[in-house]
Length: 265
Image 1: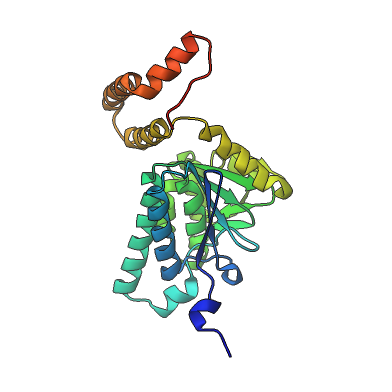
Image 2 (image 1 turned 90 degrees about the vertical axis):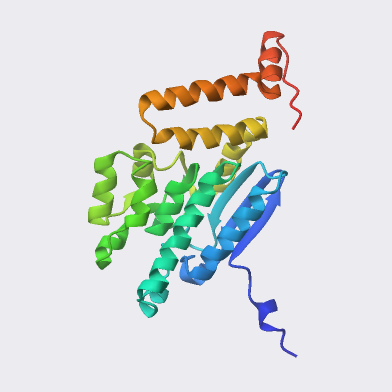
């Protein structure tokens, strides 16, 4: 007797939790993890669940199979070339990218193979990124007559303007060392070391107070687009609030007393 179809179909986003690290894996390996509507919805739902889970300290975003993500599913887009579908698709994609920023936990993209178009957008939208040394990155829509407008938003906020615009206008690939030099990723390691390097990066943040990490992430993004004077005004208020909070009182006190801090979480 054949199993029901829903039992044969694997989730589009796999979640694996271990010791405070939640790894979310895009799971369409036959399509190189292209982002169709269903995958975007699954990723949005999973991010929301992770954001509410106090046991999760760091989130890792990965891809199954031979690639991280090539961007949107072009076959799906071509089959639904109408204003309603495409407008909704890109709105959903934008909400996923915003969800990554709004998540209280740091998000690390773990990149192997290719990360192109909206896949490159995912890397840029993540807070941090580690890449295999053979990974490649591109905003390649221009090659198909499609300017990568939505990927341009986080890419242009990660790397220098002229470099971002070169990627967007040429669609050319950059390799992992170039992505590191340009600031798109934080680490480049041999492919065999990618899992270990990503975990090591995650664990550097896991002994810090979760509330301070969450507040710091929120403030970091809020101040980026503010005028300088406004940013400093907001920063002064934030660091005052932070210093008066229990975590800083314990941490600074421990430093003065030459002992390890005893965090409540």
